[in-house]
Length: 133
Image 1 (tube, rainbow, N blue to C red):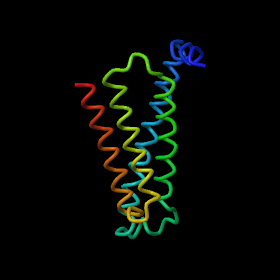
Image 2: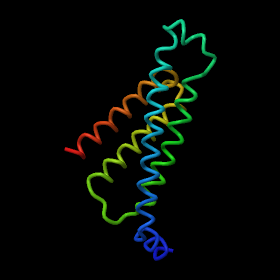
Image 3: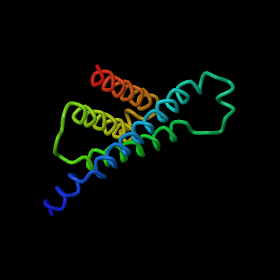
């Protein structure tokens, strides 16, 4: 089984799959970030209250989707040739795993979970800035 996994990760298409899944995961987190801002602004804005959409639920669904994509991208990348970018991506994935956990802890549901998701996106942005400079 290990030889099969090594052959998969050393193939050229596995790296492309890894980058594609990671990109889609980060895009999902950005959509969740925007939905989180809207969910936080909704109680105070008359126009947003008129929209019959649960933005908090949409935020949670996009975070789940992005978490699965980013975890899949990290798994497709394999354990070889891990550098700074891969470790920081792993920390981003773990931060969103913690955000998903807050959705199931009664003390952190609601606005606290939304703030945690915004913080995780800020951490992800910090990861991009640290890696690119």
